[in-house]
Length: 307
Image 1 (spheres, rainbow, N blue to C red):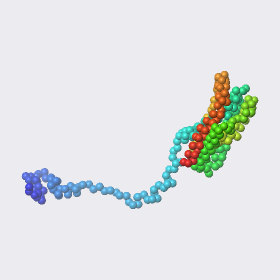
Image 2: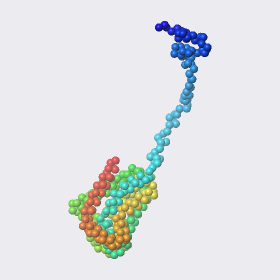
Image 3: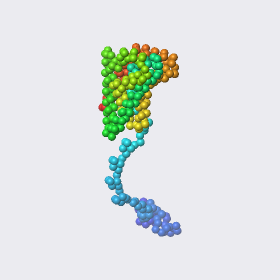
């Protein structure tokens, strides 16, 4: 094969590009064989200019966001419904153990079995409710005055400590009753005779006194209030949660009153059967409630303190 000549016209035999009428001056129809054409083609490519930012336009360290500019946890949107639901779930065990206190059930049954039983029972529940409302108001007053000094972590420790103490007291009471000691919360024998002849105002005073002087009742209420405060709810939600706690804690007592008012004859048979069952199984019920909820509260309180 002959070597290629330097001229473009001699690159392809049999074709005289100089005599071609369609030949354009300064162009070459054989770009693959002509280095000149390649150079010309490259020289005709468009030039793209890139505007680089000046050094003065670049962000400096002072322009970057600082840690104080970032949103904190309090600035983020909260879900009030989820907070309220978690608070109610945490309150249910405390309300349940209040609802199943044998002493209050026995007194209520005795009141309903006597003359003017419904009015006496209403007075008894009203006295209990009044003291619990006063406890809530007192706690809100004290918590409002110390809100700027007590942090969320300190509230968490107080609630966990109260649950631990309550659980320990219940477990100790349950073990002591298992070993044959009397129930510390059992009503004295003279109370049965006094309840039969009590008036409506005295029934209200009896209910208020049971809640006011009972150490466990105070711990129940303070633990419930601490859980509500720890839930970071709004003030209306806190009030609603506490009222719900009181309602559930006294649900059985209120239910018995409503049943006697709506179905007197049938409710009296239920009251009589319940009274017999409580007298027979009072000790077993007290032991079961003390050990079950005592272990639950003790575990919850200690685990929260450790975490």
